Image (cartoon, rainbow, N blue to C red; front, side, top):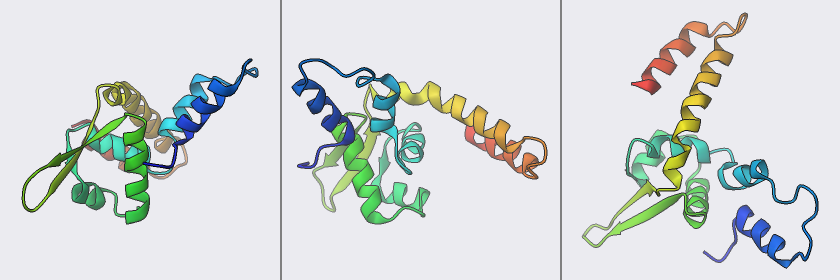
Length: 140
């Protein structure tokens, strides 16, 4: 991939600086550089269950355009969060799976699910019952 990801750009910039500006190397900024974006967390949530083929991911996230899904997968691969497995067969088979480093996001997802369920179930939201059902299906 010739285009650098946000995190790769930031790391290259840090390497060029003799003295780091205050707050330049920030864990929150790094997390957002690597995992930020509209679709990356959703893609990762599906890969937590195991390897997925491109077509499966496309069906699981129908709102994402093909171009954007490919771009997000390439960025996650470049940042070593996922790996692309190509099987030499006819027809060609490609799967995506989390790397060891990518699997370290799993505890965060349970917290995100808990927060989202609580937010949807807040007083006056009108979706409390739906949120409880959705959280139960994600945890199953």
